[in-house]
Length: 530
Image (cartoon, rainbow, N blue to C red; front, side, top):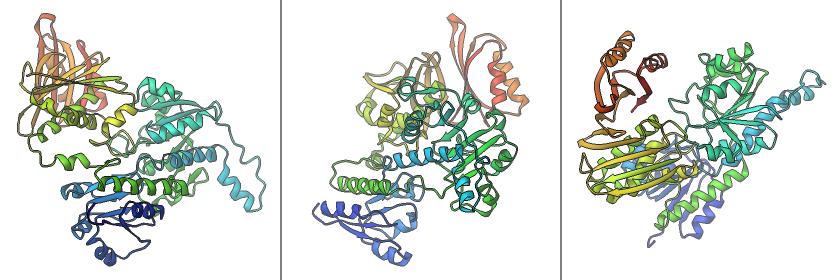
């Protein structure tokens, strides 16, 4: 580096970060509290900025920072950073996904023990001069069943620790293999089984449309009566408005919260937080000296490595920036990602091996296209963002083996991508190709030719190829006022088998899917949303 870089360290990032940057020849300026006016002045000639959660690095701030090349988040969550704006401006965004794993896992375990032994209430009682031994009779965790939703780094760390307490471990993670779960001593189950069998449930997933309101009044009937719930992941995974009634009717025995939909919590949660069977902490999962030092060390090293073009570990958007000017490759990156999103929804979870076959010239870029496929395949699986940088690593961590095969021109299209989902009984082979600008389509499923655009709400199934099949399905959709937007059909005339894909204007609910699955001749139905 010919010119000395300047990096701002905000939000009381541990001073060790400045020491490391200085050792690597980077000027580090440390700030605790800083006014907006002063920040705008300092950032005007800064090459990098490191923040925790307080500073909002939005497009307006980036507009003041004409030289900015790096944004570092000393922690996992990047909600306070406008990733799209940074990518558009060519600014590398990095986080430290490993730094708070142990701290958050330990806090989760502490909350579990606080619940079962009534520790916070007992402390408060004794300090008030009471001696309530009988009132705060607790229970052991030994022999109880712990349900873990999300078996990423933190969920796996919780499992390892609570196993030592003698708990029976069950888990739900659509991307964890049986082998990896077995190594952790976890039995993989479906979500409904986890809800019904767990004495304690802890969640360790990002907040997505699929995880929002995972626990609510609507699905409370699935819970084991008297369950204890813990959330150290993201506010909103539990429906906060429903929790108080569920506590009062005994559905939930006790509740521990470290995260909230709005932080600090708004006044409407006051009654819930003051409930005697609720343990609540102010987002302390990563608030340990060790965690803060770890993330400060990691982000400083990552920025220095990136500045020296040595490594881009922890990058959120690194390859997207590098490839943003490659117009020829962009369509194939999008095709790969959409194929990945389609593949995980038809394959379900517990896939052990993927073979991705590239036909034609696109195979020259198979490595990055596989990363794009995996980014789609593994999207929203963990606490950390999934992208081209970390997708392959996360696939390996989940125990998924990936094999790439390059071939000549494809049989149907000169350039196409085929994924083989090894070990899946149906839809185990899917090929896709580009038809025109932004028109990405499935062209074969299990060797049956079909044309299906990779977008919208799709009902996919195999069926006996006989008269009346489509009429029966469309009739059930009509009953729910679900309009068919398009229809694709692949036929094996010799064996009287077909694969049918119906694109609908709105997504069919579970009851409709169940009814269609129950029709005579319909098999392996999948509901897909792209």
